[in-house]
Image (tube, rainbow over all chains, first blue to last red; front, side, top):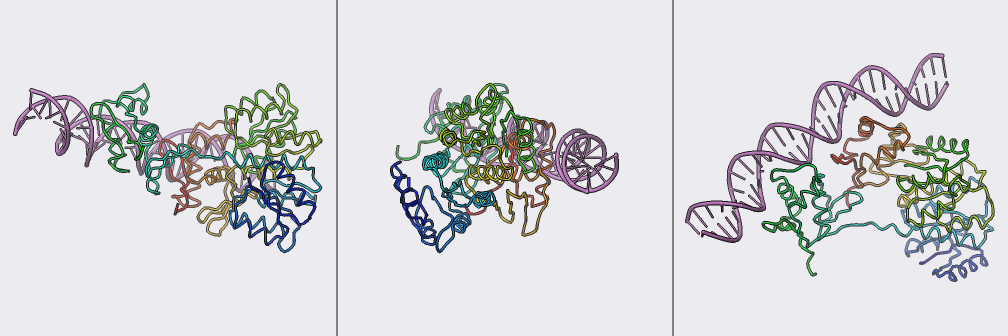
Length: 222
Length: 222
DNA sequence: AACCGGTGTTAAGGCATACTTAAGAATAGT
DNA sequence: ACTATTCTTAAGTATGCCTTAACACCGGTT
């Protein structure tokens, strides 16, 4: 967990670094605005603690530029000023939080922990199989990088099959997951959908087990 | 963008809701702690504004329970107390921010925008998509450089869709973010708004997923 | 090789879903 | 309270998915 402290006040910057390290973070410390901007562009930090009053490049300018360039690092702003306008401005410029100096070390640590906690745990569950990506969350499907549009039935069918590669789904099981218990299908609707899926991807994707049902092969090398 | 206000002070709760709606959010309001806890478990909110002093279930208990259950909703804590310990306690218990009462309406709105912005994958405070620019703060929208006037519902709908390009929003989800649970819509109002948006921009902007909902395509080249 | 059950392919009709339009409520602004 | 905007309702129209069904194909069995 790497944190960049940008603060020209020597005792404050040093104190922060020491405190951060004591908490188990890795802390880098810069006093110069321009230098800091370059570091943020080139390196990767988990958090930037940014003083607003800085030599060579103002803190607010750095913040604005970070967001312009869509750099996704969380920023905690330190400000000596106390006006609500400044605080509002900072937040709207893209800061994740701000602390007014002088601040309590216990408090700022709590804020840092809060920010770090937030920024973690944004994992996306994504089903992948060969060149097929299927994100349950967004109902979006891509094949070889390109978006593929599936109808509802096709999507349900594919996600069912992909949920357990190598597992043979009986025709009945698949029909059930498509239609539930209520309605029965008295034709080859299932096969038609399978056909459409094979067409939209590649025909070997779904293997037929004659007399039983269908499988998606396990990815190669297992 | 749906926000739950949990506040037993009537005038404060009502005032917050009105202000939130004016800003284009959908606001639900509860005064009872236990009720709120149930709502948070069952429904989906983009933000919970939580007063600490509540009947039946204390605000801090709610917060603790939310985090225990790993519910990922951002929480903004309102507190009448002013001690740093409380503030630290709140942040460490999993609050994303806190505001001490009495607070300035302008400030709390800025904080709300900041939290919401963070939780939506930390986009810059200006959402852009193709030729459409949408600034969440001012509710202003431009298309191909020219200003476009959207009504409140249109704005909410568009910003919801734009907040996650490529994500398929189910019709239910969109209706909830437009109306909360207060008022129910028993007609095709949603479709009508979609229609208006397509007319004001271009019809391919919003793609229909038949039987499911709507998506905004990801910008080309991904 | 001919048969037969099971599966694949294709095309078309029906039907549920979505779009469009307009008018009457509801809301907000003056 | 009145007006202008915005929202909802509802009805008619359009669209496209799903099923059906007819036929082609394949593999195994006689």
